[in-house]
Image (cartoon, rainbow, N blue to C red; front, side, top):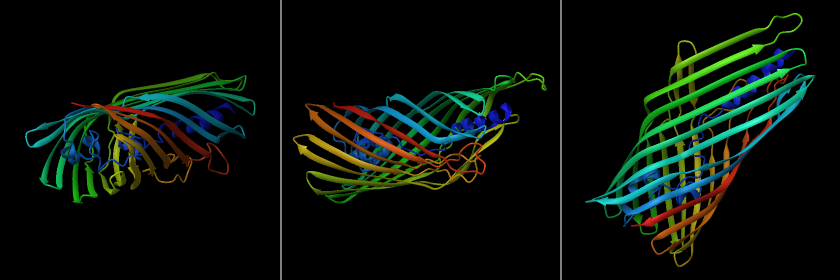
Length: 415
């Protein structure tokens, strides 16, 4: 009976650990765009090195930005998450993550505009302990997951005409991921413990090509093309073990597996974004971005012992819209909304990854005093998670959701 419970719990834990084939750019990011629903392809700020390097030509002064430090609170709920010995069991977890999202400098190089950047567009840390009891079985789960991406790069832009510019940014991207899962189940006679640990470090390269065109003073059009990432180096270390104390009819048993330096990659497919800004009056700018992450099948893990893990990313659209309103002398209110669809197909069986489609609102206030521009904002995101209840017979989907909300702060100094 305990062994059957172990299988169900481990399935739920594994499904969560593998459930983030990317919702690309779902966290608010940037010094201005973060408060405009991530609609940043027409933004003439330092964040242009990431969103659209062509806009660097529209920055008429050198600057240094400490951009959009994000303070993130998250809640994860599923009711039920799994069935343990015939009993529905809920799951909930929460956490807090500070994300130092970027340092960007912009300057002129002859007829070119340039920027250098250290960016952290994503950093998540999940830690949780849960105790579940059902049918005489007690299950204890300890889980910790970490994920962080660091982008180091530079951008260069040049005007092709008075109202047309082009730019290119090159980035080296380091992705680090770690996951530890410990499960202990006991019925008072037999105890089973299962431990898994996976640590991944990958360095990739990617380029961002941007174009900005202003056919009329009140209208701006933008195109952003990010190349697929190219793996430079990457490895995964894996550890799995299980211990069963046995019972009156079964002897104790134990297994252990260690794999060091397995070939690993964290591919990102080709990504296209179209942006528009419209200024119906001097005190109002409306912006909108529509992005598409292209479908791609790519290998994430390849090892003779651990096997091969392949991502099958589907076409994933996302939309960001915002309004930048001037409310005083060098004072602005910024409001935005965003939709970020998952690259994962809706799960058809319990073994399929979960799907998260995020919807969110952003907003903030910015003001400039002397040479310093300060931006303060808030955001809230929710995903109605599409996933199955672990071990349910007949199979059924869980009532599950993820909520993320927090604050943003950035400073830009005009040199």
